[in-house]
Image: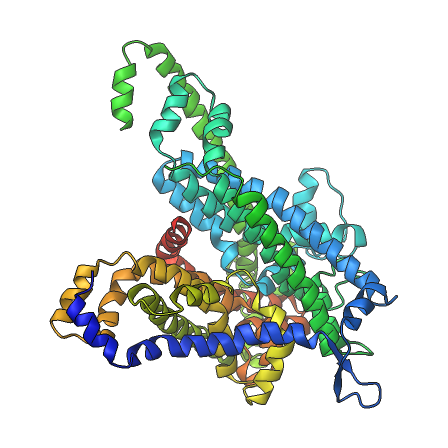
Length: 313
Length: 295
């Protein structure tokens, strides 16, 4: 508790220190993050005027309407949303289960070896999308033949994995899984280590197999982390621009097969080839992304976090 | 704890424990096998790139899995990179932008966190929520407007422009994590300092070292994404003089895509600082990651 005499004297003075403490952060955060986010939403309601393209006029939801109906734009929008969904699904059902398996195994081996494993497995995560993109481009390059050698062991035939419309997106998603599996792995590991040993021991004494112990004791206890990992995976999806741009360029080839909302946003904003950029239409694409993210976050808060049981450990 | 349970059970169910122990040894071997396999998947591509960057062109293709030998050793790729690229400059740019952003995120974030956890003022909760707002929304969605702001402030192609943008996007998480930790610093400590006549600023500097683990978490969560970012350098600072390593590597690699020696050398050069830093800091990094997750 504060000394009452002291706090009454300090209340009389103008709280300069409060201004010093809060001022810089509020200014920077407001000017360079909050304002641009809202201003972008506002700009998405404008379009270059027909008479003078340097002037922007208010057009309401016309940009959004064009995004949904324009024969040039709408297939790109739905394509990007679909690809983003595939990208998310691959992360959710390949990356996160692998991470969970690795974390469970890490929790079961000795502390020292666990530290070595997790440090090395986490290494790709600290690299940039650009480096990871190029590393995999040359690994998958048939000229070098590394991928063919390795996949040959499993009887898979040589293919231009990044060049075919059917395989490009899954390949890119798996490259991203390779890079980021370390993050959910660490989060799961922390949650698993936090489970009291007595609970697991009790299950074992009752004769439960390791499999049973995992599904009936450990998994229910780490459900909150599963939720956090899911929402992180979901939001992370919208930052995957870098990888696609590095590996396939802003046109997200072949034939837009790897086009995500991030690359669609970039192309609409800055233009490509002969198509000039349209900032306000770009803002509308960002608006759509904003809506999708909000939808995901709200679903998570209402549908998941409220409903799961939190066990007090 | 476990030993107590063991000795309690042992007399009655010795054979069960025996069987359990053999089973667990097989399980442990299996665990190591799977972890080792995945470890190989994780590091093999990286090692392959580094290893081959020190070989001549023929050796890269003839036997990519061999370590460089005196006959195959070559620095031709690095010579190309140093004569054609500006990697030392890119590296300095990345360092300025990353360190500048980290400094501002930590300082401004800690000051807000201190104020939020220390003082009761109207709008305290609301301000906390205002900052929390930014945790889930990627700042990239505001790029259209952000570019206009940066242009109108004449901050295009400057380090400061990038630093301010990264600071803004890093603050929400910093405020969230740091204020959680600062609330746990005992009141008595701060009030004792006040009685001794310490100013509020002094008390802030006194509290700061006490939340070191949290500072580590904030550092880790922000440093790597900032260093690795391609989006904002590409849009806000694409000029050669302010290019970061990530953007520099991207453009360089794009130009030299058929010069394998140069590609492998520049990849190795761009990876070297971040991997070195990671190995040096990996213990703090992982501790930071785990501390952040528990919070």
